[in-house]
Image (cartoon, rainbow, N blue to C red):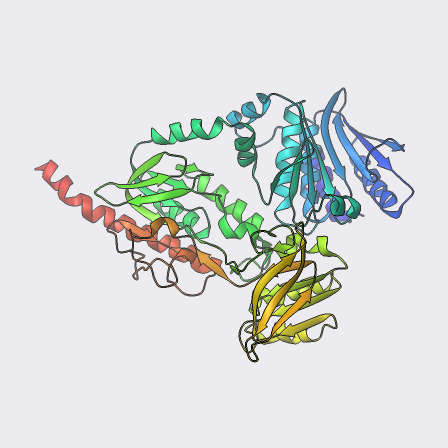
Length: 524
């Protein structure tokens, strides 16, 4: 299963292993068991420290396999064949079970060790989901560090009966001790915050004690990361407060227009941005959501945790979020058939009927991708015609299992109380109402700027975007903004990076000009 190049890379990684690893494969007579066993044999051959045992009828999911350190039960299990995005999860698990130290901070590792109680985690994933590996890797690490924690990754496409029985319609979905723990992307710190209920208060207390920043960046996406780097390079005290570092980039599958990089994936780019920021003297405060901006000689940013930060200048780069339809049933059936990421959740709808709402590039790309997985796709567009690029439209209309309906206004998401079973739309030309029977709805109608916390404080456009000038300056002195949250057109990663650096330079120039009189007075 592994090509020669991948084998050589994996063999090099496994040379870092210092402890013997025991792989125990739970098998049945199916093709997937044979395929998984072939993979595990190839891996075992790459290192003398790896042994492989086969079991049948042992009561475990088949096919699945457990990773353990010789003489110690680590509680790491993979239900299915972790290829695709999850191959990295497998490699990291092998290294960590094999004694290679994880990259997590020392205080985070200590927090994991100190968790009391028994924790049995199960994470349902799809191999095409770019958000799933972070959750899998975090929980695997926790299982390696704390003997009271166990974790199983489960490929939802392979164990479809479990997915149907548990009514899982979005990935990643995490269960803890049989109960739903969470859905969607979660980092290690976020998972720990949910388990360790005192962690948020401790972190808020630490944040409240921080000194005044010369420049505080609010947001950790491309614009925020760029602003932080440009600020730090000026040698001034720089902080970043972010709800989740990486922002919308974390939810982006393929990136093929990032100049000088032919192709990459959102999570990889987000990790590179974070690594670059942390290579400078930047105080990064993750998992913190801004609640209020208070202008003044020192600008105050209040956080939802109750803590507040003060800075001489602020760069707002809070980005945007998926736009919702705001129709009856949408919120009730979110993650129960209503989804926003076709790459992540598409495999859960294999052989089913779905709809895509939106005829721009995102919507048409989603319909094309889903058409290769599901039984049928109905694409609904509000306008009189699709807005996607011509090349995408040609591909869409060549697909036999796609129906396009224009001038369609979605008015209701319908369901049986547990999951979606249809939608209702109005034909804007005739005024007639129509029902479509289906099992999934993928919403792809653009983004909304994250500016709710700024209303009444800063000048916003009629679309809720922050109004900025050519230097990134907002209506509030000392407050600058950049990226998708602003009125700057064309919401692209490369544009956000440039706007972030520009806003930081504008803020630095403001800092110099406003501090100069005080410095001259002191010198006199």
